[in-house]
Amino acid sequence: MDKDALILSNESGFQTDWKSLYHRDALLWASHEYETDAIMKPLVELVFTLARQFNFSPAIEFTTIDTLELLLVRAFQSWMQSSLTVPDSFERHKYEFLRKLPMYVVAVVDIVAKYINIGIKLDLAALRRVAKVTDSSTNMLAMEFEVIKILDSELRSSLLLGAFERFSKQYLAPLNIESNEFIWNIGLRLLRLVIAERTHIYNSLKTSMKDEGCFRRFKSNKLILAGAIIITVLYLIPGTRHSKAILNRVIEPLAEDCCVQATNLIYLRDAVLRVIADH
Image 1 (tube, helix red, strand yellow):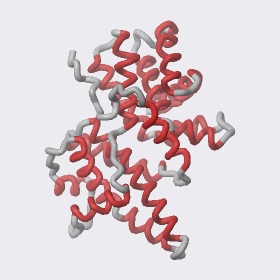
Image 2 (spheres, rainbow, N blue to C red):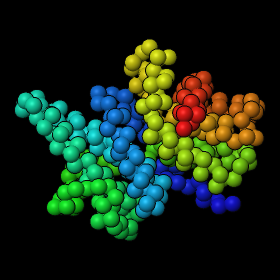
Image 3 (cartoon, rainbow, N blue to C red):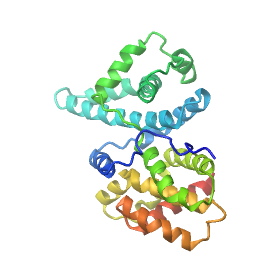
């Protein structure tokens, strides 16, 4: 067994205040007014393609996705501010930004890769070809500086990946139900599916939550999503699928870590399982 099989990210350390970062992150995503799901869907698929072809680590793969979404939000916020003084500027900025999205993806991949591993050197020309970047005249260094400026230098490893890693070590590994490698593989597959189908998963639950603000907080909380993925892993392992004893052993302390009722983890798990069934 690979003892490091569940070390996937830089954000799963066991510092005493580890939840505070997740709570601040959830507040950010619950408070902004910009729905990024429609734009993120093709970006997520592109990042998965790049990760597969260039053999990126999970940390690079999932941090790139998180960073791209934050880039969208920061850009939208900036455009909204400028539109207060310059009419119609929002749509112009948005059109130009979306036109250059493949190049932004390549820029973010390069920034994130260096953040994760400062010694890494990517083949940017090959990345641009796979990402179908049509403008060969764009200066990559200038694009990366633009990205860093929009992000206001805010960058961190994927919180969702970190939460999955933490919870896997804390709740799944001690059960000795499968090897760490198995948990790693099935967990990564679930993470990719959940991120790609996020809109479908949460929309299937939206009618159950009448309070829009409550739903936004629920959808924004990466701890809750990671917790649901953990109990989905339990369901997908034949030996634990029908074990109420094992589920009860895990779900109550897990729900407490996620600051949510255990039934909400079950609802979200079932929404994930419905998406799996559709695939």
